Length: 185
Image 1 (cartoon, rainbow, N blue to C red):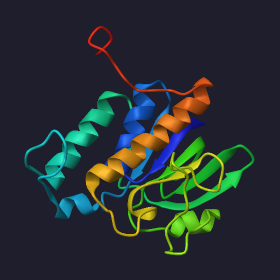
Image 2 (cartoon, rainbow, N blue to C red):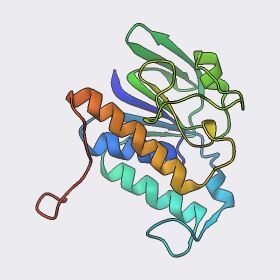
Image 3 (cartoon, helix red, strand yellow):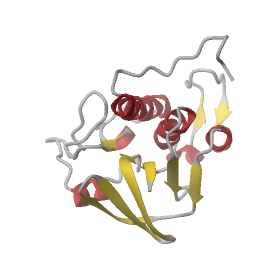
Image 4 (spheres, one colour):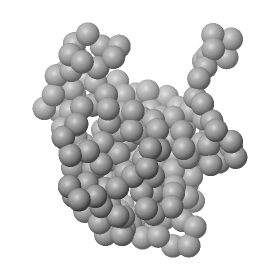
């Protein structure tokens, strides 16, 4: 069983996966590569003056790989079930189990609905400030939880917030992913 399963490999999903894996959690990402980023060019993403969305995704995937994220490219998630204290994720390459689930599927909210997550009046997935849904240990990010604000940098922040909450739960105290020059790798 893995610690964290992320469904979706755009900025939100890869951000969550990177934070989790960088800090010692076994993390997998299921990515169909249908991200909107392939249609984007970023001029407003911190750290990049100008970058093509597909090039950005390539760099983000490389960074996640460097920290040991187990990426399942081209793998569709067909079902997710809550089974006691874990999630059972069915994909077209088999079944997987995880303690935590991060949904990062853009505006596609079908898996969240099937899982039984609460929705807000505007048909977005209802989350708290840490991006946790009404289902314990299940998180939703990006366009799933936002009616209009669908920026890559906002989605990446949502993914980071979810991962930090997961890490805080795992460590039993508020966790901050902050390196100083002495401990930076």
